[in-house]
Amino acid sequence: MSNYYDTLGVPRSATKEEIKKAYRKLAHQYHPDTKHGDEKKFKEINEAYQVLGDDKKKAQYDQFGSGFNSGGSGAGFGGFDFSGFSGRGFQSQEFDFGDIFSEFFGGRGRTTTKTRQKGRNIQVDVVITLEDAFAGTERDFSLRKYTVCDKCSGSKNEPGTRLDTCKACGGAGEINETRRVLFGSYMEVRTCNSCQGEGKIPEKKCSKCRGMGRVLDTERISVKIPAGINSDEIINIDGKGEAGEGGYGNLYVRVHIKEHDNFIRKGDDIYSEAEISMSQAALGDSIDVKTIDGDVQLKIPSGIESGETIKLQGKGMIRLYSKNRGDLYVKIAIKTPKRLSKRAQELFEELKREI
Image 1 (cartoon, rainbow, N blue to C red):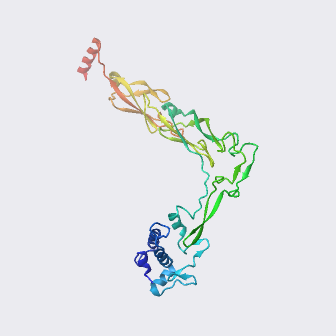
Image 2: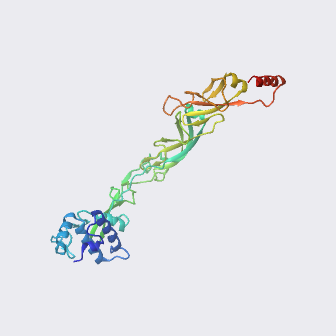
Image 3: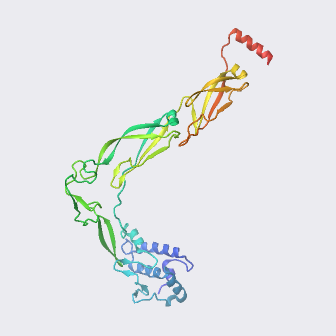
């Protein structure tokens, strides 16, 4: 009897996961149904894994070595235990051969029944102003998309006709097929091609949707855009995408906010500029400044310098889903006159001597 550890190419100190990994690799390489398969080598690999993949058998093998027999009247191939063999397939105590079958046969041995998929999601883009983003707004637009057929209500059959039980699957929507492999057979369940998993076939297909259950149509959509929304944020509207067999997909509305002539938005705060004269800067004053929701009085302190910023608390953007607001920051720019009257020149000369 060959050394099981050598057969799998692992050391005696290998963990259970390392043994399993080595087995999977070799079984894939030498499976008789593959191009370079080797039936004898494949049996040896399975014999080794039947022992080393089972904690109890592995302990006995480590203790008794080549004198170990996996036991049972089903033993064969030099101790290979067939106790896990049944009419439905072959399965060891710790390892599911369905995993190997899925690699060899592209998923065979697993249920491949049809999942009723929802319809396609749709994304649209809308452009709004900063004022719209501040106050909240609503946008209407038309969508060309697949909707449930209004003639058959998605049943696919012509109204007044019946749905017959699919003869191919007997109404189950699935076909059970038995696959034979080297060590036995296993069951595969697949979607019925005749009824596409529905179990029913229209006696007569709907004349409007031609048996699809949905039609291409135009729907008018109204979307509420909440106050305080940021640019590039997405609004998710459930069930307003396209129709599918499992229901409607979703509609995603991406919001874009246009650049403003007077304001720059940073989060919930707004930034703007205001020009004042040199005399206003020196003496102080009150001026009108624009905010997102109207003009307010801004007090200019005497001696302010160009580039300084004055904060108007609570005059910024509405915070999303809140009544609170950010702040408005007004940057002061002092305007220097390019031309002076004779009287103004005299006053500036006098001022120059005083300061």
